[in-house]
Amino acid sequence: MSTPPRLQVGLRLEHLWVVLAVCLVGGFVSLVPTKPNDFWWHLKAGELVATSGIPSTNLFAWTLPAEHPYIYQSWLGEWLFYLLYQIGGLPMTIFGRNLLATLAFGLVAWEARLRSGSWRLAALVVVLAGAMTINNLNARTQNWSWLPFMGTLMILSGYAAGRLGPRWLLGLPLIMVFWVNAHGAFIMGILVAGAFVVGETLRRWLRQPRALSWALLQRLYLAVAGMVVATMVNPLGPGVFGYVASLLGDDASQGLINEWQPPSPQTPAGMFFVIGVLVLIAAFAFARRRPSISEVILVCGLGWQAFMGARYVVWFGMAAMPLVAQSLAAPRPILGSAPAPARAGNLANLILALALVGGWGTLQPWFKWRLPLPAEYQAIFVAMPGAPQIFSADTPVAAVEELRNVPCAGPIFNEMGYGSYMAWALYPQAQSFIDPRVELFPLEQWRDYVAITRGQEALAKLDQYGIACVLLDVHLQPALASALDESSIWERTYQDAQSEIWRRR
Image 1: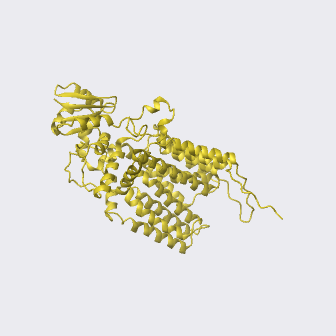
Image 2: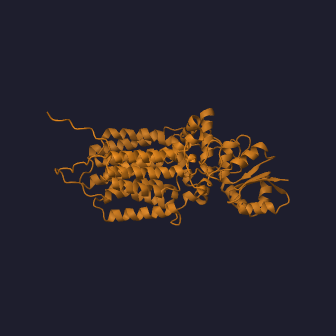
Image 3: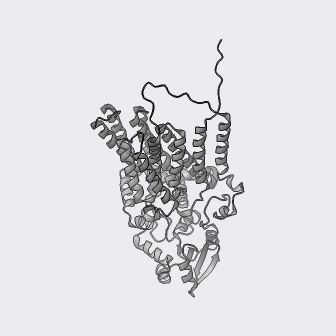
């Protein structure tokens, strides 16, 4: 009588490499402090969605009427952040960001493995994809786009390659129903789908090997049409496309915000983006497996977007790096040849993998502050009650608390990012001069804000707006601080290492 095979529990070394890579990227994301610019006003909007429905007006800034219209397009992402806040406070919201990033880059690794057959190549490219996006990891509603983007890409690429059947296409409209309400990056899903529609149609017309049949193409067309129909399932209906177009055409957003500018190779993220592009070109040039027309259209389109604006680099990295792995992979065996026998897993590798995942867990908000991290690292965070080592030092916690305890006698001028935290911590007691909702404010007001920040006719412009208090960042607005210090009608009533409050005498 033959002995039944024993159950072997373990991982191979190649599996351990990819676990290490994903945990490395996810751990880095977990270490990144959350800056105030976007997170806080989104969290306040989520609270309003939960308590009184989706808002539709300005609310947070006194420089525009309270009833001035404003579109909270990513209301679902805001509500989800607030839901996490209700469940576990501020640490839970940031854990949500960390988990979304780790899962998304885990999918990047999985897609690279499917394309290349190599876990080692998957580990390599996921680290490069993560390095490209180190300036795009702040906690904000865009985080809710990472998984829908990868889900859409993997379904379309799997269908085009014959790995997935037509029933998987049903997931595309379902993903879009969520995505169109969570963040404006839903348009990336339409663009990715369009790249596959054009590319796979050309492959069929050119009668390339393994091109989709016309019957399969028709199902792809229907699925993409279903995605477009699904975008209508939002409070704006078809107007959501007008919102995206207006945002892309907003002069203040395009001209003043760094993430809308081309990535600079002088920054770490820009340098890794350039490296990623060079690696992709080299991989395509010396590829053992040539990319398809759809894949070339996809990376060229996403690459062009990334060159135009740093905020798009994350999508290029997620889509292009699995193609690098595919291009570098050895050709698959010809039909009929016997596959190489799989090596047995090693229990020690499994234990190491669990240790890596546990290490990622210790970097989460509830535990990270207990670790003996360097004092220089701890110094980049603000002392936030109940949320240590989470939010960056430029979050004006103490200064805003001072304004809450000793209210300003009139309108407040504030640093832009501070306006986000003011929306969370001061509204409706007080409102801001300006905040990170860039498209809300007229370009002339942004020009005045920049001039005041630079100390250019600052006192006259503060008088013009009737400003009674100034809440400034001493590192970003030193010229304004100097102008106020030289004036006899302004008095500094609060000061810490990051912020100052000046009141009119």
